[in-house]
Length: 262
Image (cartoon, rainbow, N blue to C red; front, side):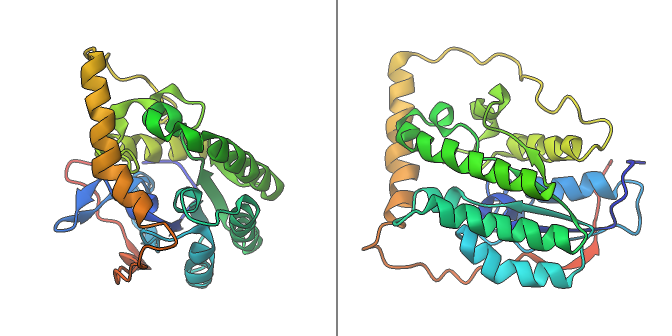
């Protein structure tokens, strides 16, 4: 039995919390929040979980669309993870993004929930061609940490962790975690919350086979053209807005079905 005091967990956020990179459009997405809920549900038959996260949402949209429904569910645990969608968007405003995060921290902790968040990893090590965005990441992470400290929010700080730059933790687009990455983040949040048994979440994976300079350059070109390019174009002012119709995959608190063998 996993030892913890939580019975009602609600996750809010963007595509990272929805679980993109861990599943697909046909089977559905699992993701780190689902995996964290599975950890917390083990041995707790009354544990329930809701996931209100929707892909493509900037932080103010997460606050405007998800905070009210989250509070209505009266969680005793909530995770708030957002900001990546803001970073590459037109008119990015670090103060506005951080303010929206802090408002969610304040409202949820004020309602009695234990709140946890996850910082943005070092994208310069994950995708070298995206290194120009690194100052924004460093600045936003600092603002999120400061807001979290003011409200007693638990922080899983991925930015300085070497394991967070391992390519095996990332899907091909390098913007969403792979199943391995989602599992590591779930374990990391569990550890940050004080759940016993997950202190080794950041242990290194076995060494990778070396990649030639030519092979590495080819991977960067593929990523820029095949993944980063379309993602950036969709966030430029002249690109038509997306109306993809996606909604929360788990809008109400329901029991967690544990994976077979858990």
